[in-house]
Length: 261
Image 1 (cartoon, helix red, strand yellow):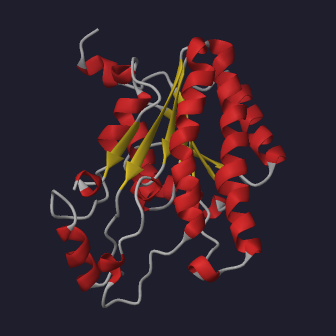
Image 2: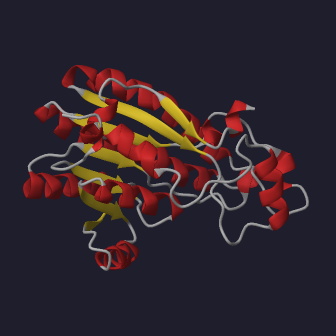
């Protein structure tokens, strides 16, 4: 097998949660283009079905499924569906995220609890359910999609002269926890030949970002720009594939050098 062949996902079954957003969509594309039989799951099944139709025009096939990550029964139903249809699962990408704390640091305990129900408890339950399936077959790669916000504190200067804010405690809490949870899962499943790594992306530029914010943010990065709609793809394929078969328990910032400064 050549080194390029080790990056292929042909014959592998993948699940990504929350695949319709700016991050998820490019991860889905990366998995499918690399050859994986790809399931995409979230609460909003309609948005995933629209994504499937969009991809189908390019000859790319994905399989949308319903998932409520706050509901363990929903997690188990998805697991059972994948096992019944494919027999196993080799790749899990934990990408789903809930952002209920619209009022930031001054929001309610109920909003914080709602965030943790999906982003902490749900992450654990989903990873355990799918990880145990992988363990039965002795092969797998789990990729947690974190954030550089799990590595550093907020930078108020990025938001100066805008109506934007970075004071969202739940996001910093669960993205920071995800990095160490990655190490836990890597250790727990390591003897079953299952790897677990985390990708911590920086900010992705969107059309609704104020020009002043983009300029200020770009000045904080080594590469002088925010992330685009393809910057996650190579990292995901690398971690999902046999090219990274001796890499586990790591956190890789995909942030244009933001956290390097």
